[in-house]
Image (cartoon, rainbow, N blue to C red; front, side):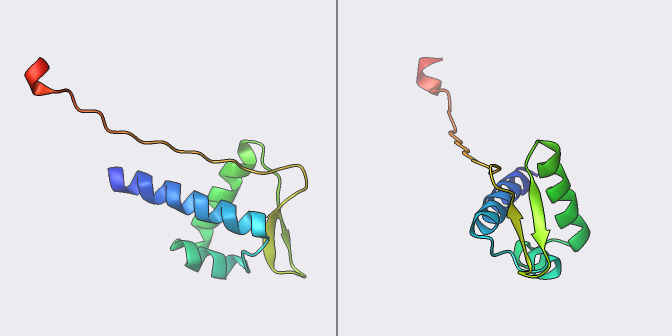
Amino acid sequence: MPMELFLQIERIKFLNQLLLQENTGPPEALAARLGISRSKLYAILEELRDIGLEIQYSRRRQTFYFQEGSRLQLEVHIRIIKKNRASA
């Protein structure tokens, strides 16, 4: 299951990049690019909205985007620390 966490992080980072560029494409295409179902895409977007992000969709431009003044800064630092057996 740990690899699922890393996959989720990478998926959110990629989605964030596409939202910032206003280049997601329509929902079906975006879901396919992220490797998820359309319903899972909407669930992720709803979770992002729940934490305060304002995400809109433009039918004319066929893209999701952050409303002005809203954006996500995602920083993840993972470091594995192993106890030195000799010092135990």
